[in-house]
Amino acid sequence: MCLCATVLSVAPAALAQPPDAAAPGNSPPIQHSPAANTQPEEAKRLFGIVPNYRTSASLQNYMPLRPKEKFKIAAEDAFDRGTMVLAGMFAAVGQATNTNPSFGQGVAGYASYLGTSYADLVIGDYMTEAIFPTLLHQDPRYFRKGKGRWKRLGYAAGQIFWTHADTGRGQFNYSEILGNSTAVAISNAYYPDNRTAADAVARLGTQLGTDMLANMLKEFWPEIDRKLFHRHPPNPPADVP
Image 1: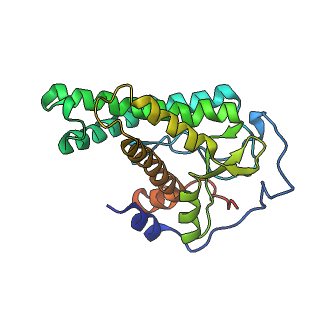
Image 2 (image 1 turned 120 degrees about the vertical axis):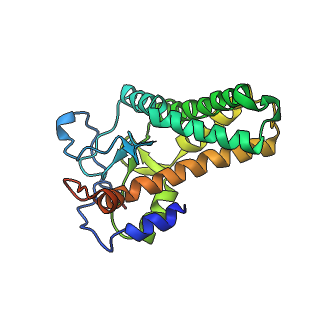
């Protein structure tokens, strides 16, 4: 199923646009008080599978995360049951296409595919959501734009390469690129096959593509949830520049 077609079919023509909380020259002050966070709680899983612990409805009332909060998000994503389901799906595809012949087939082969697929997801989560965001002072959360159709789609895809620093200012998403690159480099230790540079680039592309599709789903989730499950969020998502 094409995710792009799904999200575009349910995206609204226009939503209310609140004041820009992170416009250039007007960066929000760094605060850590939880009392300032008035945003509605997000669903923990999308479609009951895709972990959704790092989505924020907007940049309104922005507060940076402490390092321990970044590690908490990474742990919630990494050890969520949905992550295990996704690992199982990737493992099934890998075995069906025989991407690592040395793993073999049958139950033992599938176990190898499952273990390595889950390791990919866990390491990727910690690298992109905790370790690099802490070292580089970047925010690992996805801040929903909440207005438009094509603009939102482009925004969601672009968040792979553009994120926010702990100050709230936008900047290149070093955590995503370097984090996934590091995870791919580590994966060479447990993948007996496919250790060439081309294979590494292919795995990195898969990681980035998966995160990009997840961003699109997170961006349009309020509309998808309302259309398919007839649930209404307490507040509409706010526009993000």
